Length: 252
Image (cartoon, rainbow, N blue to C red; front, side):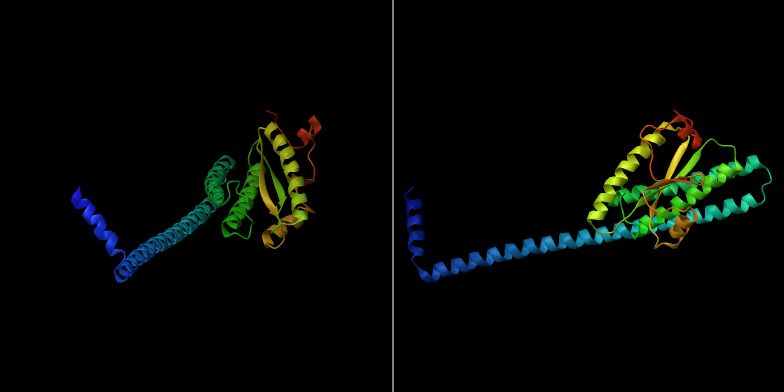
C-alpha cells in the first residue's frame, strides 16, 4: 500500500517536469497519428478491393451475357438451317417451338439481370443490357407471329409500347401516371385471357429497328397496344364480350 502511494507521488512529481510531459505528449500524438493512418490505410484497401471485386463481377456478367447471346445465335442458325429442309408442317412447328423455348430462356436471363440494376427492371434503353433485352423482345414477337401463322395454336401475342423519357420533367411525371393507369387496365384484361401474352417495347425512334416497327405498325404515341393490325390507345375498364372476341381471347 505504501509502495503504491510512493509510485503515485513519483508520477505526480514527474508531471511537473516540462520536458518529460512534452515527450509523453509527443509520443501520445505519434501513436494517435499512427493509428489514424493505419485505419485510413485499411479503409482505402477495403474500398479498392471492393471496386476491384465489383469490376470483376461486372466484367464476368458481360462475358456471361455475351456467351448466352453467342450460344443463341448459333442455336438460331442451326434451327433455321434445319427448317429449310423440313416439308412436314408438324415437324416445322415442333422445331419452331423448340427454338422459342431457347429464346425465352435468354430473354428471362436478361430480365433477371435487369432486376439487379433496378428491382422493377426499369432501365433506360441506352443501357447495353436493356438494349439487348429489347432486341430479344423484338425477336420473340417475330417468332410468336411466325408460330401463329404457321402452326395450329390458340396462343395470341400483342405488342405493348411504353413511353420512355430521359431524366425528370413534369411531362414525364404526367406520362408516367397515364402509363400506370393504362398498364393496370391492360394487365387486368390480359389476366382474363388465358391464351394471350404481351411483349413490351419502348416507344423511341433513335434506334432504327424500333423506329421501323413503330412506323410500320403506325404507332403514333405511347402507351399503346398493338394486335392483329389494330392499335389501341385505351383499354376499357369493363371490356365487352365483343372486345374479348376481337383479340381471340379465351377467358379463364
